[in-house]
Every structure is written in structure tokens, then in C-alpha cells.
Length: 425
Image (cartoon, rainbow, N blue to C red; front, side):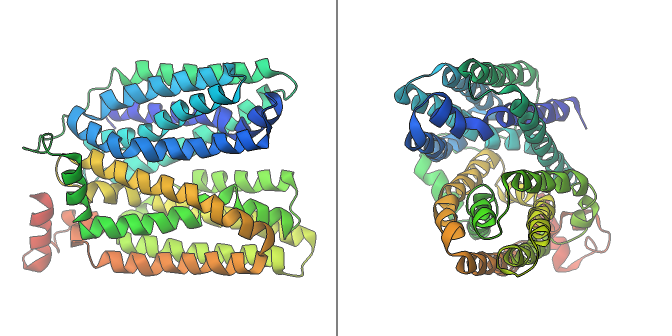
């Protein structure tokens, strides 16, 4: 791992640590500590999603034209200003404006950092680089949330001000760290910077494999991440009688599974077709939803229901560990030379859209229509498997399984060698 990649990974960990400090406590801070009510608190959470949806289409274009590092630095400063002002805000208007700045900055960080990882890695090392990124993000979020929970005091607004000030300091520290990164300059694509934004999006939408991957990504994020803190938690409380402490244990089990399994599954992923790995995630998550169904709809004891619910989150974590070295590298491999930023931003936009719609759909279903909720999302998990198999037919041999590029069997004549040559051209 080179010096640039080490700094990028430090940046990922610091940004996740800062977000873990505050995000779990936003609702309580706005609704109770500042006394602005549940409606304003709900709007703050919605503003995060809306801000991301607004800025991400422009972020990809900026990354292509200016490079990922300048865009990242602007995003970090914006997020720092948003975090600090959020800790000082006492009115609904200033809270919403601050949340918009924090949400926009946070959203742009993701594709910028992902593009820097692409620029500093090769096809052979990319899966490990993104696996490390996901590992550090989850570790940072978990540690940040744990420490933040011990610092806050719901009777003292000043404790939250300190919390948001620490988050802002994390982003500014990250500015200092990332400003020293020297990434390989992405190849310049003649004519691209001068084209209209519509043309670059038209080019992306003309890539059938990328479009299918975006559809698949939407279903993945909608059926998993979009349910964690909304539909699935509501289902657990209402249908399975899960306590808040058990819900926290379930979230911890998810993070623990990722931390333990991430590098254990990496060699397995590297030697398999990406489409088949994603397809297997759909099957694992279908089992997870079935276990959740037992927790809330079965007739076992409360202890069995709690254990089943915690196991559901752990199974989701196993699927996430399989996806992290698969999805992001595949986006990078599908992007034409010099356009990784555009493709990363498009995929991040799909993710944000799924995270915005997922809670709106899953929350009411999970809270009231328990059996239909489980059946619907079990079906979505099986759809993931079907979409992954279909995606595999659109990929070249090396895009689907990068290890083939190093295989002597593949590179000896025939159609696979042509695919290798095309991928390396």
C-alpha cells in the first residue's frame, strides 16, 4: 500500500468517525434538546437525502474536470461548516440550512474518495482497497457512535455543541491530511471537459452494463441499508417485541460481522465471478428476511425471537462484506478512461435515492403490515439474485472476474484472450 493510499484510508476512517459521532443523535438533538419538535427533526433527516440528490449529479462532472482531490477538499470544508453551525443552531431555519451543508459535503466525499482509490490502485489491488475502505468506515462509525454516546447529555445543549465541534474538527483534520496526498493524474480524455453535462450522462446511460448495475444497486440499497433504521427496526419492535437495547445489540452484531468477515471472505471473492458473488448476497439476504420472519411471526419464546432478530442483522453484515470488494471496483472497471468520477457519482446518486425511498416505504410496512413486509423484502432479495445473473451476461470475462487477467489459461488464445486485450486497451 503506497503513501497516497494510506492517507486515503486514514481519510475514510476519520470521516466515518466524525459522522458516527453525531448522526445517531441528530433526531434527539433537534427534537428534544433544541425543542424544535419531531416534524423539524424529520425534515432534518430528509434534508440530508435531498441535499445529496441535488449535489451528486454536479459532483461527478466536477471530479472529471478538476480531479477528485480539489472536490474532496471543498466538500470537507462545507461539511465542517455545516457541522459546526448545526451545533450552534437554535432555530428551525438555521438547523435545516446547516443540515443541508453537512449533507451535501458528506455526499460528495463518497465519490471523491472512491475515485482517488481508483486512481491509486490497479485492477488486481482494487478489491482489497475497497474492502479496506468499507472495513475502516464501519469501524469509524462504530467507534464514533460509541464515544459520542458517552459524551452527550440530553439535558445540556452545550454537550451536543461540543460533539458537533469535534465532528467539524475531524473534517478539518482530514483537509490537512488529504492536502498532502499525491495521486497519479487520471488520463485526460479529449473533448470530455468541453462537452455538456447532458452528453456525459447520455454516454453513461448508453452503457447497458452500467445501467443494469445501477438498477441492481438501487434494489440492493433499498432492500438492505434503507431498512436498517426504519422498517426493520420498526418491525422488530412492533412484531417481535425487541427492546431498544436488543436493537442496539443487533446493530453491533452487524458491524462485528463486517469487521470479522471482511478480510476472511476477500480471497473467496477475488477468485469468483462478481455477478455470482452478488447473486449469492441476494440468497443470503433472503435467508436473513426469513429469519426475521421467524422472529416476529413465529411462536417461539422472546429469547428465541431476540436471537433470531440479532442473527438477521449479522447475516446482512455477511452480505455487506461480500459486496464491498465487488460493487465499487466493478463501477470503476465499467467507467471509460478518465470518467471514474462521473460513474462513482452516478452510483452514489442511485444509493442516496434508494436510502431516501427505502425508509418511506419500509417504515410504515414494518410497523403495521408485518407478514407482507417480510414477504416483500424476501422477494426483493431474490430479485437481487436474478438481476446479478443478468448483469453477468453484460460483462466481459475480466470485468466479471479480474483474476482471469493473470491466468495463463485465459490469456492463451481464443475469445477470453480477446476480452483480456479489450479490457487492457
